[in-house]
Structure formats: structure tokens, C-alpha cells
Length: 566
Image (cartoon, rainbow, N blue to C red; front, top):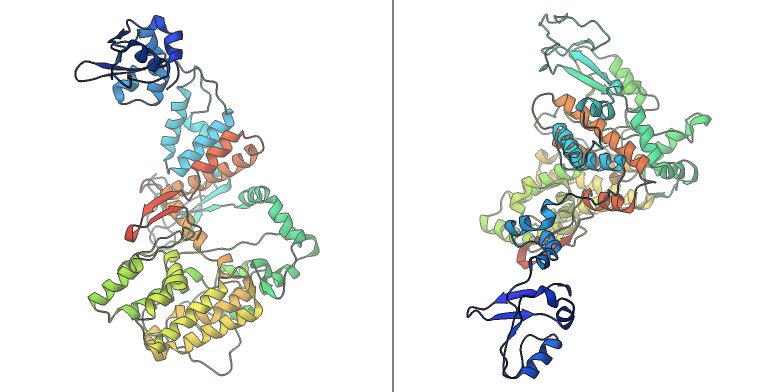
């Protein structure tokens, strides 16, 4: 409380205690209606007031200040407005009805950028973003932001870079491009009537030219790009990133001289591929390791395919064979997330848990829940019983950090040693820097793990994911550590795309709008960053971080603080 403010309290016996100090008494005597004292020891009371006290020490007498003038209430409105006790207190403050005259501290562009980023971060639909712009415009005597839906669509939706292609809703045959080709009313292949003019029609696919987005990304990360192109020297004895991979270096060596320092490599991911049929698959272990299938051999097999037959597991030609500098064999790498974490590890835990009694499972759950993980681990420990709901990162944490002490008392020595082969191999290929000799060690561990799988868990355990472990170290040698090209970023991006879908109608258009808006955000952020004031930068850093500071009560009265790193 400031020197200009005074607190008044009433006791039940109508005796009021005055909290005042000498400065207030000296400077604001006119603001008091009365100051009445009940003296028995007048001198001690006066001295006590002057010293800032509330009562006399000997006689316990009180100084009564019954009321303050109205103009003194106005001096207290600021604290009432910013720290009210209730709604009435808040509404009774003078600032509640005063026109705001505080100057703005951001530019028009910064304000538009912050509102757009706020909308994206909170998964607001575009209609809510337009309403937000109109709301801000009501704060000012004249509009400060473009609020027209038509204008904002032109700003954010670069539809000139999107091509829409029609397909038949029944047989998926290609019909042509919207706005360019004359589209038929009936499918030429299956004779199904096609009404492409309906707004509800979703029989189409969209192509987005990524050239401008790649260009903008390179501009944002220009320093990193220049460092990789010109300064980074690959280490043939140490694998630290994609750039140290054998196939990456081979790809770079075959580029023309004029493009050796001006190229971009990309990691692609696809979902929705046909699932493998259930059933055991036997992979023979030979003394002589067969040569991997070559690109040329694979292309030749594709050219010999009939309509319904498959040859050596190849079912149809792939359009990827038409990509320049792309090797259809070595260029397709094992997916660490689905293969190792949600594949092999999840299946192995199913084998371990199937014969446990309810009491044993309860004991395991209690052990897991008592683990106090450091804040570097993004995912907290959950019970073994809930493992079907575990995320991939939870599986990774379990394999590397928890599984050995949890499973050792449970498994036989033979099965436990078999599990250790998988854990150690995974630990090696997840290192930030992998020496070639350690990579060879991991390759040996995975081969032993696969070789002993049948003996420990039967032919049913010889699954596709188990077989892929035989190739994963070769992939690390070719393209760097598994963390450098895993599908974790794609899974995260898929979740963001799902969050951008607000209704079942026009899903394709919503996804395209989401991509365009995020591209616009990147362009604006790159433009505004050099001129942003500190408040805008701080707001973006604190409010729009993906990982938010949290405090969570864990098991055994433990509390987790901060944000996770892994």
C-alpha cells in the first residue's frame, strides 16, 4: 500500500482500527472527516501513531478513522481495477469506464502476425481469426487491420500454387485438372456419373508446389545451409548426421559441379501403405549374406510385372523410380519409430506379460509408477498395464532406461540376455556420434537378436519388423543415425494437421489452408524478426512454445517440474 492510501477496518464492537503513518497524517489531513482518540495515555498514543504503530503498548487504545472522502477513493481505483476482490469491486473502479489512451507498442504488421500466430497455436478456425481481427478493430476509432474475409484469403491462401485434380469417386480413375481440362459428367472407365460442381464433392486430390516454401525455409536457415554446403567436412570414421552417411556422400559426389554447393535433400514419409497380412514369415539365416537387391534389378522386375502377379515381392511399378538421383533400394530406409519402438518392443512386451498373474502385473505397475524420471524425459512413466496407450517416446524411454531393472527379476537368464541384445543395439544407433566400430557392434547385436528370436519366442515372433532389424545398421551407415531421419517429426506434423480440421466437410481445403497459413507465418516472421521490438519477441518465445512449463504431481508424492527434452 502506498503512502497515499489508507486501510480502514471495523471491529465487531464498532471500534475501528486505523492504519496510518505520519506522512499521511501530515499531508492529507483534509481528507479525513474526523480523527477521534480515546486517550488514557495520550502521549504514548500519539508517539505510537507517529512511529507507524497501530495501538499503544500499555493501554491498548485505538485511533479511529471512520471514513475517507470520495476523492480519496478515486486515488485507490488503480489497485482496485488490477487487483479486485470480486466483480462488483472490478466494475466500480473508475478505470472500468474510462477510454483507453495507452499508446500502442506494436506495428500494424506485428499485430496481424501475433493474432494469426495466436489463432494457429490455439487451433482456431478461420472464421474465428476474422472475428478476432474485427474485435481488435473495434478498439480503435478507425480500422487498423484488414478484416475483410476476401482480403485475408488473398493474403494467406496462395491458391495459385495449388492444383486440384478430379478423380472418379468409384474407381479412382483420373479425370483431369480443375480449371484447365474439360471434366466429364461420366467416368469413361466405369460409367459412374460424376458431379464435380457440388461443393460437397471430395473426389479430388491436390498438388502443392513446394518450391516457394523450400526457398523461404532456406532463407530462414541461411546460415545453417551455408555452413553445411561450404564448411562442413564429412568424417569417414564418425557418423554424426545425415551428411556423414555413405549414400549421402555418394549422391553428392555424382552431382554436376555447378550444383555441388546449391542443392537440397529431403526426407519423405507416407502413410496409408498396404498392411502386411497376418501370419508367420520365415527368414532363413545363411552363412553367406546375400547381396542386397540393386536399383537396376528392381526396375527391371517392375517392367516385367503383369496386371495381377507379383515378382519377388514387388507388386507394381513405383513412381519413385522416376526421381532423379533417387535409389529405390538404398533410398528407402527402415522406420525406427514403427519398427523398433511400436513394433519389436511392443510385441516383445506382449510375450513377456502374457503369462503373468494379476498380482505380478500389479507389482510391475507399482514399480513403474514409483520411478521418478528427471525433467529431461518429456513423457512421465505410466503403468505396464496401460502400455497399449504408450506413445513412441514412452516406449523409447522404457527400453533404454526402465526395462532392464524392471524385467530382470521377471525373465529367465536366457530371455533377459536376449532382450539385452536389442537394448544395447538400440542404444548405439541412437548416439549423437557413432564410431564405425560401434556401428559394427550394433549390427552384430541385432543379427544375434534376430537369430535367437525363434528359439526364445517361436516362429510367430519372426515378423516383418524383426527382419528389418537386419537392415537398420546399414541404413545408419548410409544415411546417419536413426534420430536424423525418423518419423517423429512426421507424426507430430500429422497431429498438427488433424488439429487444423474443424469439421468433416471440406477436409482437403482445410488442410491446404492450414499449409498456406503456416507458410505465411514463416514469411512474415522472417520479415519482421530484424525489426521486432523486444516485447513481441518475448511474447512469441513464451506464449507460442510447443512445450509448455508444467508442474505435475507424480507417484509417491513426487512432483515433476519444467519441460521435457526427450
